[in-house]
Length: 215
Ligand code: AP5
Image (cartoon, rainbow, N blue to C red; front, side, top):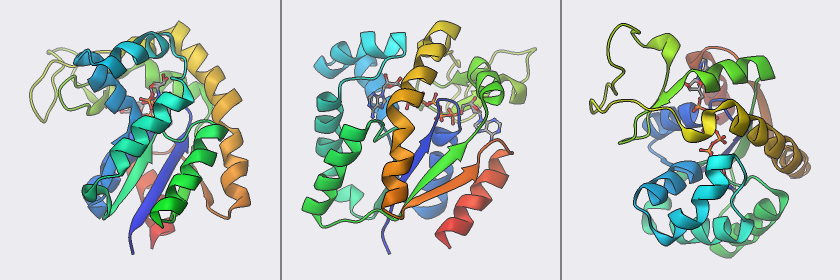
């Protein structure tokens, strides 16, 4: 069976972390719309220039831009073996339009996994997050040696903090999540696809739950 998964969850809930584990464990492609946008900003493409001000402030990028991006991305042969979407869809109009896209492609979703994490834990995770600017791997300062330089264990690049991880942007992102993305849980519950798991536990424990869902 071809796995087509959506990871839902607040900023900092661990979507990127779990999606990378799924990519390695299940040979499916990790599609992070946030990473695609950040690469476009770095390369200063037209998309990047358009997305930057929204993203830096913590606001969502407009639906029509995101839908075009996802359509162009997923309509390629490498996605036929399956994928895990991290950060898309994130509004009801996005999920409705994505449903039509899937129908057109004759593809069905396997599951929508919602990572449930409380606000206190989310703030701790986001304020301590460091990311590799080269490969987008995510770390937390709790796991890093504070005495040395913070470098990526994969490619040695110096880790950085995301612009939208400052307190002001984080507050706007939480608001956007509650207003725009939380309603998606009901959308996918109505379709029998929603699976909720406790995302506040250790990374490996959360992944085991996902594996159980996929077994
Ligand atoms: P995006 O990049 O998708 O950010 P996000 O949804 O805010 O999610 P995060 O990346 O902050 O968190 P995460 O859940 O991936 O957690 P992570 O694994 O890193 O989007 C950024 C922006 O792009 C948006 O604000 C918007 O502007 C735009 N955008 C993107 N998609 C869009 C769309 N579809 N429509 C409109 N706009 C869009 O983990 C967080 C930290 O916790 C890390 O330090 C990690 O090491 C640690 N951690 C993870 N799991 C655990 C665990 N189990 N225990 C302890 N620590 C953990």
